[in-house]
Length: 170
Image 1 (tube, one colour):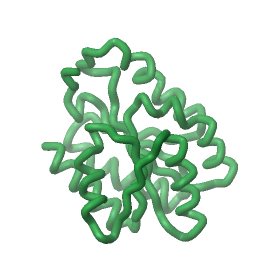
Image 2: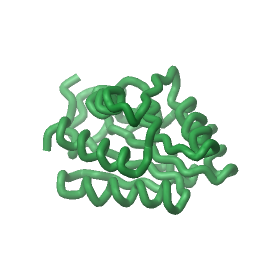
Image 3: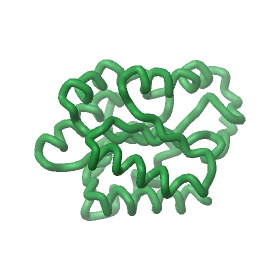
Image 4: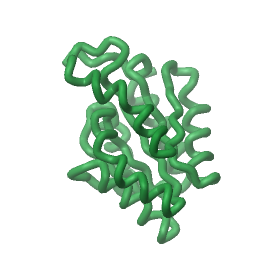
């Protein structure tokens, strides 16, 4: 499945679920998804200076009856634990889409420490992690993440692994 195809599937499902706010820190893995959200009149993108801002924006969207998503690379997960206490304490729904580095096929040794910490850090903060490793897992994983977050009010990270995305050569 191409990046264009999986990004369209995710965008269509999020927009169909009423997600209108797409907060992000620039990342090649989410770039097509961000472009789709930027071009669609139903959705708005917000460029962040740090991933933790996205947690607060998504909580704010919920307070006014909206739905937001935070898009980030695995290295950005290290910036959000303190703000995730807001999600737990305020019982806000939270959906993050995390594109992974530091695992399957990674060539950059600097990506490994945070890549290995993503799931333990998120789970320690009460966030359910749903990993996608194969094309045939994506649709059900997106549906599950949307339901857990926006219907059940949980914190959820949809983790797009390097096995799914393909390892970067840089």
